[in-house]
Amino acid sequence: MSKSGPEKEVSASRMIDERIEELGDWRGKLLSRLRALIRQADPDVVEEWKWAVPVWSHDGIICTGESYKDKVKLTFAKGASLKDPARLFNSSLDGNVRRAIDIHEDEQVDASAFKALVRQAIALNSSGKSKRAKKARS
Image (cartoon, rainbow, N blue to C red; front, top):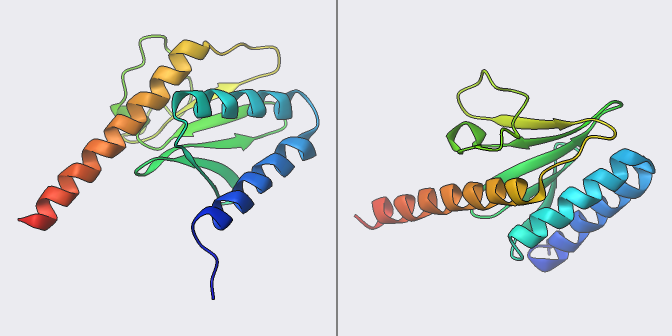
């Protein structure tokens, strides 16, 4: 019998915990803070572990959280479709779909603007889900 549902989610959450602990420096602290902001923006967010990185989803992927030697990168799967008045997106700006936020040591993230991006991504994912459901019914 395969594991699914909450058990699978717990193991992904545990893997994210382990990644944060494994980093053990400013990147781990930053990833932990961003994770907390995502959870504040959406208490129902689903944590997943894909492509060896943390993934946060709600009716589809919201963003991934990658860590590199010199930065933490949050890649929003449908970032090109999101409004970013605070100009948080500073990477992957040329693509038609994704957008990313690269955060280097000692840089701050506007928590309110970040949570607004997360909520927009969820709304976009949810609108796509309802359109797919409507199409399936017709």
